[in-house]
Length: 95
Length: 427
Image 1: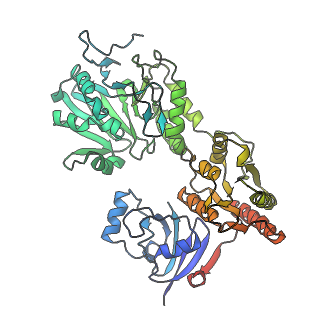
Image 2: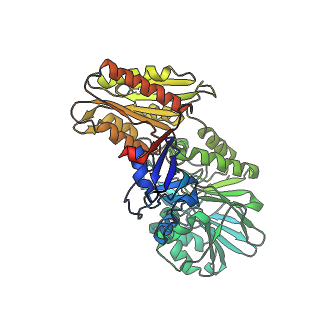
Image 3: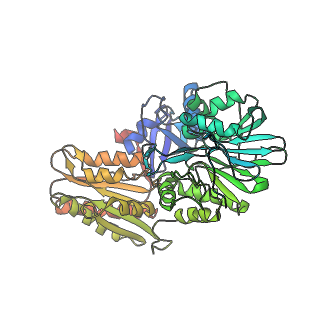
């Protein structure tokens, strides 16, 4: 199975994880500072900044785009509870 | 200088002239004692609003809290007709400034509303009106009133993302929104006439602007080339017509570090706060302190919360690079002095500071995890899992504490090697 390598910059930890894993599943296990609310893409609490490997994450859905806009997210931001890793290298940090 | 007259001979509210073309049309709220839950005021506040008259139309800068609309419209009508209003500017969208906007736009339907780009989504959420038309503006944009020009300066996070200042170019008057404002109510309006409002000015800064110090400095850098201003006209409190530069300078002073320490530029600071009931969490704190001190270029301080007040600790925390908290767990929770300190930090910027937690426990030890979650919520980095020790630490556990302190100090200096793990190993 394809694996991705995602770095949580705030805690300086890199995790290799199978493609399709949501960022939330990884970040909670390693204790990154990304915080969570509803965990289902509705509240915008888990907005994170993607500093590398934007295209190595799944595309944001229409719903995620809407929540990002409503929360005035920057253009490099995603919801950690929605984005799934696809492969390659990714770096993220809390906003 | 003349004292303002806020009402005409029949007692009706009237506008107050600030220059030939600029009038104050705000309102006074002397009975307010608590503003926005977090702020006290001993004599109320004012909601300042202004009229600017140009050769080709009139502009209204900010409105007032909705319940005070009567005085606002009466003052407006004393100096302008609604059909003359060409421009409405909202420097900030909070309800105390946008409250009278819907009615103003109903009375002056030809007027164009100007708000900052960041204010767009807030406007809809606040006023619940889809049909409101507006022009979003950024720094450098301007609108002409003929022989008068309003130029916009985006000053984000002072104190909302949307906040902006508006500069009346020909008169060097700055309509500053909440910046340079304070909650102080005095019918004499002007800073050279009103009672002593220095405390209110500083208190307002400390609670509203302090968390955004870096943005304050950016805004001052934007305003400096335009100064000296002849007047600074904020949205609350006295109108600053006498030596307005002093207030710019004061903001600059307040936006420096609260405590000028003698820490070297190449050093990092690590503060360890703890509280201990039987001395176990204290022993952990001391061992962590020793471990951290073994790393050069990290200045470590140890504080027992039982012996200190919160306010000076908040000042220390604002200037520190790393923060550790030691708490016992009592009845499944961290203890109150820790929560009291952590709930007092909304006035300072904590983003990306290093955090860590430790503590002794008797039964279950949830306190450490709870405080870690709180630190993440406050936007600290928590790269090293906290240490929990059941009751009295053994010699081996004391060594773990030393290593914890050492590792955190190295993390502060960026000397800790990055970790690579497989998700499968975490399950």
